[in-house]
Length: 387
Image 1 (cartoon, rainbow, N blue to C red):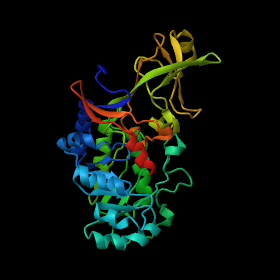
Image 2 (image 1 turned 90 degrees about the vertical axis):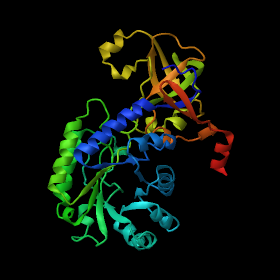
Image 3 (image 1 turned 90 degrees about the horizontal axis):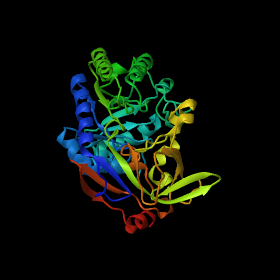
């Protein structure tokens, strides 16, 4: 794609790639006869919601009052809300904007379910349970790591659930395979079998990366259908964060300076890793760069044979660690050169900050190669965050 007509820096969502993902997810939902909804924590670019609506996706999961409000205002539906905590100041508003309300603990349920039911008589209550199933490699992203604050353990549940609890929510995956879901559901059924007949719905959370190349989509469908056959009383819900926007766009940046220290050349970009790609630092993982090779992905022998020009990519904030590893380019970099980070639409955009007052990248949608300009961030956006 020719990025000459796009602002720089900018997040660019490619609409055709998004539509391809939506078609696959819709296929899974139809074949397995389950409900798949968007998780705002992974993607909340509401300028793209008309594309979702056109493909039949009109519901989403919210983790806060603001996300619930976004669901109502921009998706036109009540939210499936789960939050680690609810507060007295927000519970009434959240309940009014939610079709489903899931509690992280029995204490939270006791504090707020009566208030919520008075505000919204049709609301469906659920509990988040912890299946104590850990397949996630990075502890920071493992909801079921020992000592986790997320979800209720089997040993802490009463034998008979409160009468108005209609669903269970669990989340134990992160960019996982269908094979991981098979094992997870086995754990769920072993631990919570006595509770499943008491429920009307079960939310299997996110982490189902069905749009990733090589994902066993048929196994996912078969697994969900088999679970539904074993538990016909349950309406099944999935809420992927990454799958919807997986590999649907990029972050455009530009080289503004090149410095050398101790033999290391660093190309300093007009973006900040800590402000604009914080998930890459906390995960941690190195995003792919168009036209460059990440030597960390090669064997030692391949690295020795690798030819090119090595640069460390650095951000424009004052944080010493605002760097993102080394890449090998086929030619020397120069001031003004375009650097394109691939797959930067899911999670990255929702986590950006204005640390150092660094300006946000603009937001664009690419449709048939043409740039649709969505938003540019101004000084007033920075100032309003601090007022």
